[in-house]
Image (cartoon, rainbow, N blue to C red; front, side, top):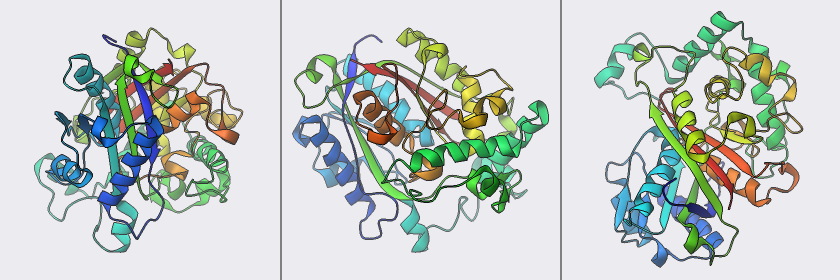
Amino acid sequence: MPQRIAIVGVGESAFGEVPDKNVWQLHADAAHAALDDAGLGKQDVDGIFSAGVDMMHPLVLCEYLGLHPRYTDSTMTGGSVWEYYVEHAAGAIGTGLCETALLVYASTARSDVKKRLRTGDLPPLPRGPSQFEAAYGLTLIGKYAMAARRHMHEFGTTSEQLAEISVAMNRWAQKNPRAFNHGKPITVEQVISSRMIADPLHHLDCCLRTDGGGAVVITTEERARDLKKKPIAVLGTGTANSHFTMSQWDDWTDMIARESGARAYARAGVKPADIRFAMIYDSFTITVLLTLEALGLCNKGEGGAFVSGGALGPGGRLPINTDGGALHSNQPGMRGIFLLIEAVRQLRGECGDRQVDTGGLALVNGTGGYLSACGTVILGQA
């Protein structure tokens, strides 16, 4: 990295089902929590990084929060955008465009469905490239299901192996009192007997839909030394995107995380073998399996065997998503910011019963679109 920067604050709003707050209140709660965690105030923020469904989202957000940043970024790549923002913040801070960056996101995805403000994953009349797939009934979940089926066809991956991923995330959720599915343990048999959503993905192969918000504060390592909490260094980042429509994805078993990961490893000066702990976007169980292979954490085609036997859960060889993940903790839409939050807490040693031996490193990988855009971040103890 051209200049050392650090994450100095993380925070969350209430999440799960929060019917009494609107999306801007959740943004504000998360932002204030992260700034307080850092020992900073909103007057210290001069860079804002945020995206939402509103075209003018950053302007509305800044007005609501009372911010007047000199640098604004509202890039949109879906769930991976928060990892993209870490790279963008590094560039902005490194070139003097801002000094203290606030990354913040919130959504009322669960409450909106209950209030019938959201009706589904696709608009009534899909436009652009999506119209050529929607005509055949291809849903959001269907896209992931096709990737899962292809991996099964090529490598013999089984539904039981995918179920192991959900069970591992659920076991972490049992250690996190804030997780949506805390107190609701599951087994592999329950995953594969849950109702089929899009063959071969069952209900418990699919992420939650929750409300909630999260925020991250980033500044220079020099500035970080004077702040409230132990800074967590951003050692390396990488971003890459491959496609939007499924018909333009060259290989449904090869995620572009292969490229974003390689860039992050090189910039951080580490190798996949150095990674003992990771936060990996788990929109669906297949997302995790493909990402593990693409990041070189296991060999291509061997993901099914790698995740078996509780490898990703408590006591496993590679603990991931120790908060319970999108599958069992929270998923307010674009969950990548929560990956960063949990990684920072693990590196600080703040996770209590779910604390793991990170070896001083954390790999964070966000995935956006339809297995389309990946951002990889390597964090370490400063």
